Image 1 (cartoon, rainbow, N blue to C red):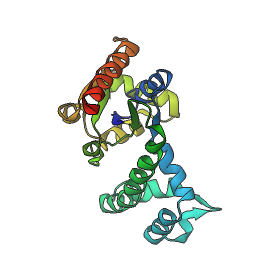
Image 2: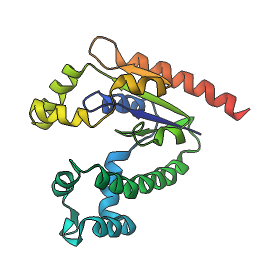
Image 3: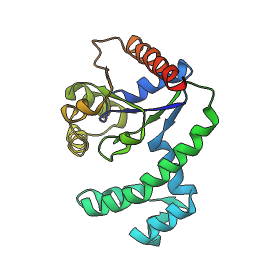
Length: 200
């Protein structure tokens, strides 16, 4: 069973792409969703986060995400230390999750910063979902109810597409000009074909 990464900048349409994979019978692991659960359920993660930020970073058993975001926003060292806690925990969780799907050709791991954190190196193939910046800003302001400036700040914290494209095995254009479903279906067939070669 192969492991395939799906990533893309904020508002690129990677969640839409992953929903199509699911409809086509490919299991999808949503790394950011699972990370939120690990902050709440994994005792080792909770202890390490408390050690980094102080016990009061948890309120009624829930991580104060707004406070964490505020503290790491302009502190790259603190952000790196936080990532060093959560990324290995997510990796371990993903590997445990994957075991149950031995009878499928591949599983998908959806993650926002797959290239930035080097996680792509542990996967068999990686897919980058792209869209023009103006469209991404429009999508996120509508979805999250935040300002254009806030979206631009988030985009600045992620690598630009031209830095990620050379690292990707496949690129899906989710730009409202290209049909997305045929692009996903083509990749499914290509990866399935590759898997047969792996099994020989």
